[in-house]
Image (cartoon, rainbow, N blue to C red):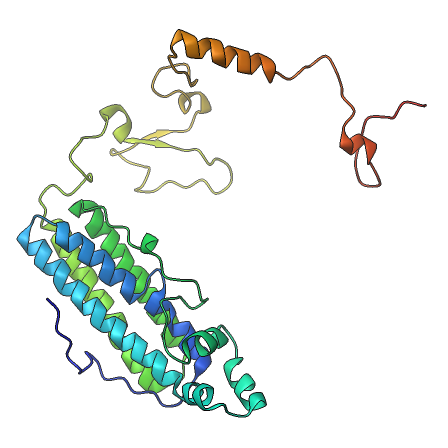
Length: 299
């Protein structure tokens, strides 16, 4: 059950309208790393989590993310307050056009949303449930949540760096700081699970768990704790990087006899001939820059 408190979690003050900044801040309203995506991610996880402690944590933070969504939405609306009135009352065309085309996608929020907010990111791309990457496996979700909070913090940092409005900076700073607090909580919840790595229940195949395949070779090859030491077997010889299971490295399937016959007929019908060099459209229409083409026979 939800009840709405009319007081925001953090007071929103805007020194002056700025539609361009408003369109950029929309990233944290309807973007991949925004507050709506975070709220939906943690709600879906919390509803399915069997552990009462994690469930409580996830639902608490999900609800806080909704409150952050409200804060971000109010920032956007305050930054668009001037253009909202102008759009509604039909200010002189030239002046209004200059206002809503200051840059970025400010015209999108002005024309489509009347200076309000929409479920879109800073480029006007609609919000999608594909942003919600919950798997309802706690060791996977907690790691994903930590990364999500880190990504959101970076976006808030960038928004803080591009605005000179001290009041907006203060509110964005609060939102950024809460990402840090949430990441700490998620990390504690992850490590409160005694066996939290690897993700899931099934163990890895021991012959591959400690191998590091050096598959990008040349200048810039580096060794470090990610591929060096007693924990790793470093494999760099090409012949040891192919068919590592001991098989022949090919793909095959056991087909019923009927399907084998059908597949054989299809292969024969679509086989490429190697004993002919057909004249193609590239040959017929060859011009400067076409490279080598088949010479045309004299009529």
